[in-house]
Each structure stands twice: as C-alpha cells, then as structure tokens.
Amino acid sequence: MRTSGIEYAAKGEMTFCDIGKPQDPKDTEVLIRTLFSGITNGTERHALMAEHLWGQFPSRHGYQHVGVIEKAGKEVKNFSEGDWVFFGHYVGHRAWNVVDVAGPLALATENHLTVPLPGHS
Image 1: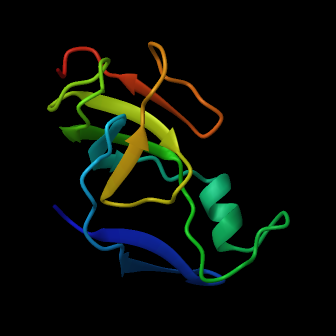
Image 2 (image 1 turned 120 degrees about the horizontal axis):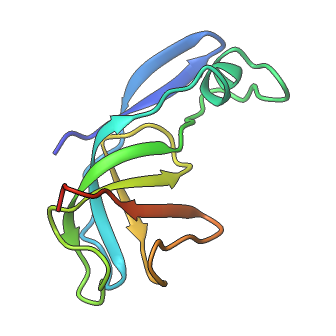
C-alpha cells in the first residue's frame, strides 16, 4: 500500500509527503485504500493560496475520497473487505485512511460520512 499524502509546504507550493504505514484497524474501524481524491477549486485552492483565513504551513487539506476497504475490524457490520466507499474525512489527501464506522447505516457522524458505493462490493 502506498504511504504518500499531499502536503501544502508553503503558499502556492504542494508536495508529496510520507504518511507512514497504517496500523491495523480497531474493532469498529476500517482501513480504506484511497483510489480517488476530489481536489476542489474551493477548499484546497483557498488553503494552498492562504485565502479566507487559511494560511498555516505546512498543512494538509482534503475530505473527498473514494477507496476500497482493505481490512475491517471484527465488530464492523455494514462494510466488508473489498467494498468500495465514498468517505468524507477531513485528514487531507492521502493513500490510506483508518475510519471508525461504528453507527447505523450510512454512518454519518460529526467527523465523517462513509457510504458504500453500489456495484462495487
């Protein structure tokens, strides 16, 4: 699994960074390998160009991801290894994410939304 992420090193400068290897998911978590990231002309550009109160560097931004579940904790009920998911998790654009999916159905919480994608399980 890749271990890269995108970091905003300075105003107008984006670089790749090493985020390390993921830990195994806990009982209610899933490990998601990122396939696609949605980089927008809004949030990410504003952060990159230090607009609208953004401007701490280095920093990481991003929250739109599509990925495949590589591992699931033993208490995960709504997802299985191999499922494709969309997830909104504001941790920056990165090769992998570990997300706690404890909760009902679409699993919306104050921190993220994880939704299975039809036709990819």
